[in-house]
Image 1 (tube, one colour):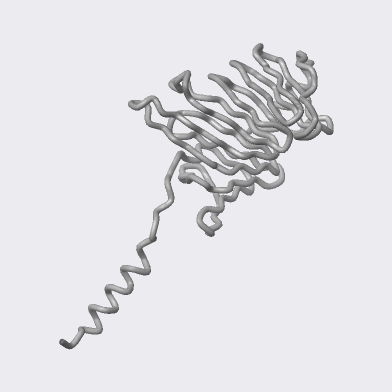
Image 2 (cartoon, rainbow, N blue to C red; image 1 turned 60 degrees about the horizontal axis):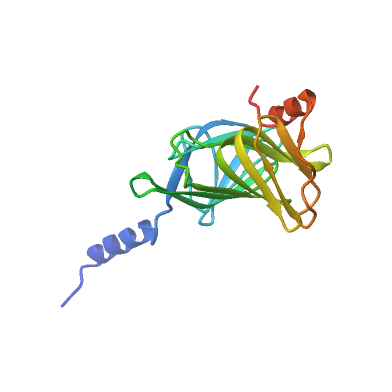
Length: 205
């Protein structure tokens, strides 16, 4: 049987245009300033308000840049300048009681979980100095005063690494870290100027 070359060309074009596996959308950029880039499945793109973000995407910001992501469960992640985050896992199945968000982050960020996040949700952020586990919270993490700091604004944050663990449970409490194998520093109430400098690092103002 003779094949129609036009049909073959159409089929080939369809196969080339159809991805083998579509990326999983997990949220969207809700605000951006400056140079913000996402790398997903080998493709690099500029990120701006209204664009989706995907599972396993590596997102980074440039100098003086800011980026805000709202995940499908309502959780909000804000990145400061020269930050990088990888969305390692995102599961949101409220009818089944399943919620999980796992991130790997460097640079300054602020994470505010949604009010609808269930008590059983697993939300962890791996940083160069510790793994941060949160429960119904709003907190900041990033480099400050030559060390890595974590500041809780609302809720509870567990800061754990190979050296030990501390819990931040009152607004304004923070800890400082040097590396992943050295225990977190004592929990203290950060002075107002340090709190302002931390929040300014992720502010759009």
